[in-house]
Length: 131
Image (cartoon, rainbow, N blue to C red; front, side, top):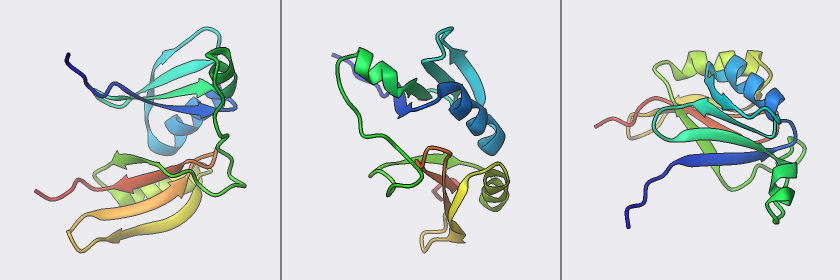
């Protein structure tokens, strides 16, 4: 049995607003949006970043902890590798992301910064890990 990592799906209160935010803040493009507006995928390479409505979780028969800016960030992050983390950080904050930690160089040579999206999810903006 072959297994591969296909999607990371964030359950959000408003799928179209979240997709629009990720376009404005991070420059991602929509790959697929269901006509119901309950599900969307962003073009992020081989593994898709997707958004599903919190209502969809209920329709699938389970509950999720809601991600909200007013709450502590959940125990995961979305890491977006970029060529200019400082510029990406400023663009994200200008588009409405909440600043968490400005980009800084780590001891291993990677530049890493953090913001939270409109739903409170933690997003890492980083350079590629040096080889």
